Image 1 (cartoon, rainbow, N blue to C red):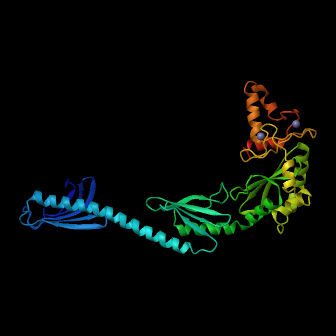
Image 2: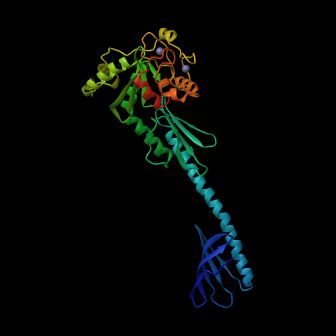
Image 3: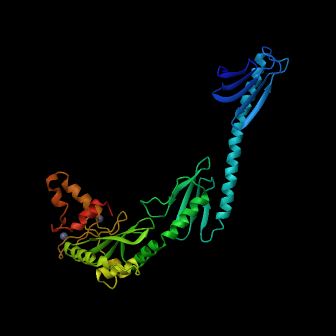
Length: 355
Ligand SMILES: [Zn+2]
Ligand SMILES: [Zn+2]
């Protein structure tokens, strides 16, 4: 035990300071009323929320007195563990109380992992999964809200605060999701392949070989950006219409109706079962759906009706280009079969990634 840091308060009878014992630090008040005799000495220890006093009996030697202190300090360490366990129990009880209240929420199902490591809230379309650490700190694990945006103000909180923030956000996104649902229902959406609450874009069919990639701002439902994918002539036609008509965007109509108006169409092509058999497989891999992608790239030659997956074209070119680097740029912009030019909008799609 190191008592070198004690400060004398009163002519060798009172000391105050810090004692180091087994790597722990104790704030200490030491009183030796009959100095230099140890008789009647007291040490008061303040450690975290504990304090204890050790008294020196008349029969105690100095060594015995200090070993009393050491014993008391050791049991204080044990108490500290208990204290943490008590805190944890308290937290656990709070969480179970919160869960009892949250389970009564209308429309949401609550499921809790048996080891209390996660809590999941879900309704028919949306979910929020919260994670709990060993110390029962609550954090976000996963959710169904749009990607690439920060939806929660803080990374720490309670089950209730995260749940409330989640449902408030869903209220704010109501119009956005209603627009997305209309497009998912009334258009032939090729990407994402499964309707997704996390993607804020949709690629859907506008006419044979021509597709629109629509990006939406979740919090500004009428703020959209559209690009077209397909043979150059068709892309040019729709791009011109879009540029001319976007200024006449009607706030009273939903996104789907506005887009129809812009494209001068009564409806966008829908996916129906008859079409399904007619769908063109990718001319490179021979399949329709591959890695969540559907073949929608074609060339400018209207007599060539081959279609390709973006990923397959990429792979095919890198294979061909392996030993012919100088040809790569030309290969990357022409149809692998008929050598006719591929749409310029396609190059952009290529650099966007696999979307
Ligand atoms: Zn393919
Ligand atoms: Zn071609």
